[in-house]
Length: 78
Image (cartoon, rainbow, N blue to C red; front, side):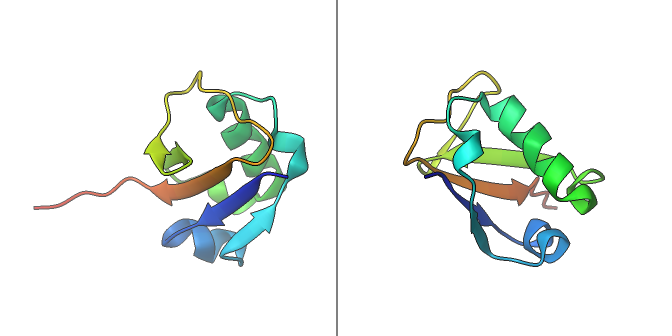
């Protein structure tokens, strides 16, 4: 089972702080983001970052069964 955590604006767009999505296992980080955007259309307009098991993930990183994914928007400062 893949647990997906949402933070900030992504949590607002999804309406949840976390969900279980077993169908993400075996996909790349990029594919996982696309599947999440399909499941939650309000994510489509957001610049999304992804981490897998508390580490920033490149787009070609593989999501394994049991991984924890965090989805959040880009942070800017000034």
